Length: 103
Image (cartoon, rainbow, N blue to C red):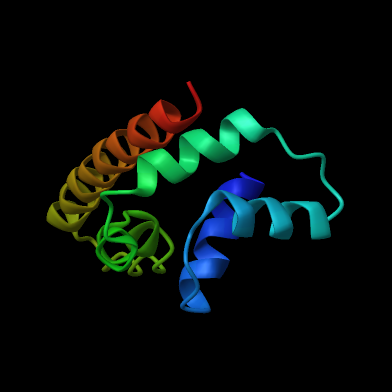
């Protein structure tokens, strides 16, 4: 996870996401660097538009507070269940993508 955070930090600071830069950040945090994971992450992010990936992340919708249920609103409960199911599916897809980064 620290490697992904390092890549996000580099992106935020408008620095290149390179093996050297990620290694420097991870070392500075006091964690032992796994060079294979660094190489894998950099290779995986080579064709990724990080800004678009952040905008499309399902975490942003999952973090939004849930609307309070209306009194006696049976339809609202069904809508909420459908929304939760859709959110869970999109979050599951995102986790599959992340797991492919780390084998």
